[in-house]
Length: 152
Image 1: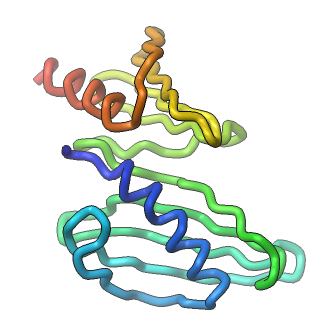
Image 2 (image 1 turned 90 degrees about the vertical axis):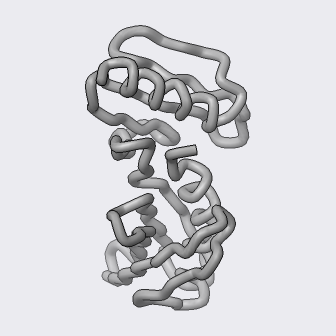
């Protein structure tokens, strides 16, 4: 399938590990869970007020695939991971500020994809039409791809 939602969610664990183990820089993960090579660019910044912040960018030869942000007050605390961007077809879904587990993309339509932590149900809104009942993100991504292709 032509999307990187699974990659973004798989990288949550890699990103949490990277901040705790202080693994920063550029590396290539050969044959990642998705079956192909993924280049990870991991940038770290620290401030006394904000603690540790890690930005993880997954990319390949044709561009960005997913981006995550990991924060932790210190290296011993449990990191908080947020998926900031993930690709579906030619669209890049961006995290909606203030709405955890919600992403938006603009193409021929405006798409909002959301779920809740620990839930298997996904909601996709296309323009103002809410479509409920997707059991997994792959089904929602397929609907996005169908909507974009139908207008070509």
